[in-house]
Length: 186
Image (cartoon, rainbow, N blue to C red; front, side):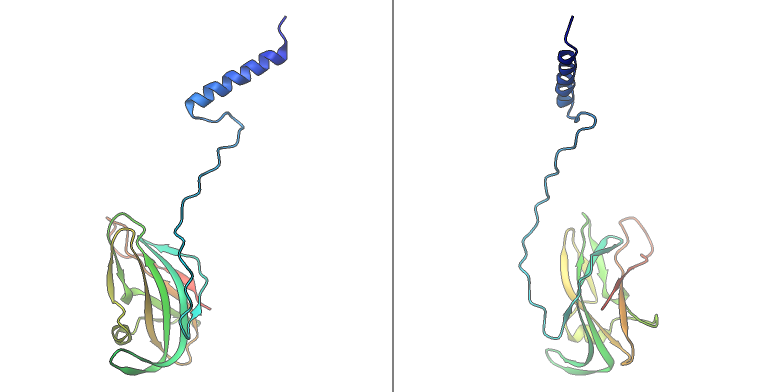
C-alpha cells in the first residue's frame, strides 16, 4: 500500500513542474512581484518669487496630460523684456506642465484654457500678456514631449480664482473638441 502523503507530494510536484513549464503560476499562489518601472530622478527646483506651489495630481484630457505646478494671483502689473504693463483688473498666472504621452503628435492651444472664478465665470488667457511674457499661444507637442509654461489671465480685481479648466488635443482620428478637465486652485 502506498503512503497517501507521498502520493499527494508527488502530485503537487507534478503540478508545480507542469505549471512552471507553462509559465502560469499554480492556482492559489501569489503572482511574482512586479518589477518597478525605472523613473527619472529630477532635482527639486525652487518656487519662483511670488508664486505659490500647487499640489495637484496630473489630469488627462484627450491626448494631453496636464499638471498644475504654480499659481500667482492679485498681480497689478508685470515687466516684460521691453514693456511694463498694468492689469485692467488683476493678473493671475498659472504655471502648468503639458505633456503628450502618446506616440503621435498633439497640439496644445493656450487660447482654449479657461480660468474659473468662484462665481462660475470663466476667463480666457490675456493674449497681450502671453505675448509680452513670451509664452506661446499654440504649441506642437511631439510624441513623449513635456513642456512647462505660464498661462496669463487678466480678470476683475474682485474675482476669486477657484479652478482652471484644461483642454487637450482630441485623440488621433477623433473630430471635434474635448470636454476639458478642471483642476481646483488654492
